[in-house]
Length: 298
Image 1 (cartoon, rainbow, N blue to C red):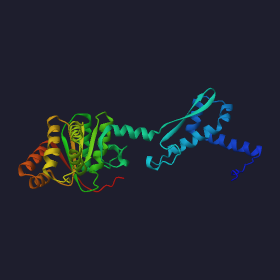
Image 2 (image 1 turned 135 degrees about the vertical axis):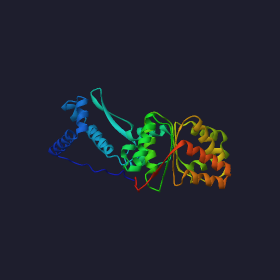
Image 3 (image 1 turned 90 degrees about the vertical axis):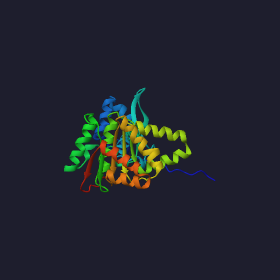
Image 4 (image 1 turned 120 degrees about the vertical axis):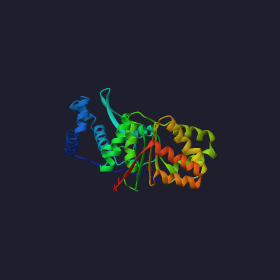
């Protein structure tokens, strides 16, 4: 079998010169890339000699500037950014994890649990649409972040009222201030995962349980929607909340239900004394907020 013949592309000298001229103009008109060329103090001769590398850098930089997100990255060197430096008179290229990957790793290191959408990861309280009821909640959250108040917070509202989004925004800011790791947990998922872990890995369960007890911030999202059982109450929720109450650790809740309604549910499903015990604790420690209106955050 004869080897495949690769056709050669013949270009006139004038065509090559025109193409180089076009690329040089593109480099000059790309402000970040042109700034990099000036930073490296490249001469006109070095730019010409390293034109292919500089064009690759420009295209890589332009693609990353319009980042579609980690999951949609279609670069050949996915999740890596190209940079350039001068070495022995030539422009040398090197790659490092992109800024989005670096930010994601930093964020993940700040969270023990992060049960909210990726689109919320870079949000803070400044992105919240303000209403009269939200104003008082956000004022309280700002004071909690500054350390001038120490109460727990219980936010009730209908689905997509903004309750989870607001607490996710606060969690991001609180973690960024160095209060880590933060645990933002979907209550149902948390109870189920800890139940499974208690059977599969006793040591792992104890480690995760202790981490939840000691986290600087715990958010229980959709509280009251978890499966209500003696395990949920006696092995997870109450001992964690009791530890946090005794150690003055910030704890926030979102829910469809009032505190008293949740207490009644646990009274019926577990024991009357247990439900009353939980409701009394939350009523004593929490400031209550009811969010009105509907806001959809994407």
